Image 1 (spheres, helix red, strand yellow):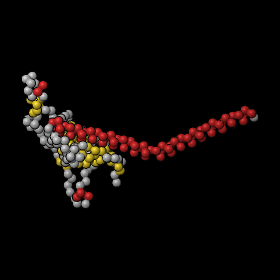
Image 2 (spheres, rainbow, N blue to C red):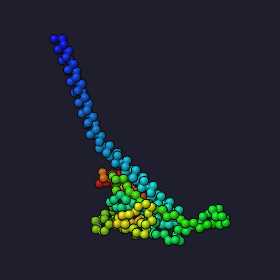
Image 3 (cartoon, rainbow, N blue to C red):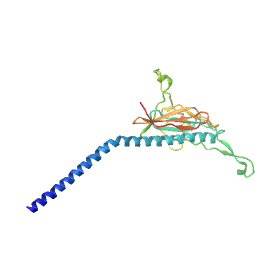
Image 4 (cartoon, rainbow, N blue to C red):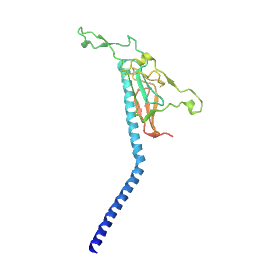
Length: 219
């Protein structure tokens, strides 16, 4: 009788421990289910911020390229897509590429002629993000209109560093121009995620400075 009682007690203890484990796991599952949407939003917001941060850096670099080269540069993006591009507004002429080095760089003590390097680049946003199609006043008023998209001439695309193949057929936004005097076109760019989170990037025309807004939710 004593052995039987002891065996029953051990069995009950083992069953109680398993029950506790099931309860703990159930609580963890519930907590995970409650916290999952917040985690997904956090990850989407982080990737959006990273993409916009890089985009701001690229836009600021476009301004610097225009100032350094003396050329008008353009920044364009793919509405409804992820790609963007930075190239001169027009193909530079041989005269555009001529510059002068400081006098001390010349053996004769006179400014020496040098050839400027034309820099250009293209890239794309994170796979979870895309550029929103710009909404004009006419579209907001319900007036039908064709989307404001353009193609970039092949001779300008040829200036791209790396493989720019396949970009000639892309429908790009209108150009955001950056001028050698540091000014730019007044424009705004909206970037959104698949979960409807969005951020705005604004270019101030008078200074060419690029600003980034806060994360918002698209309707």
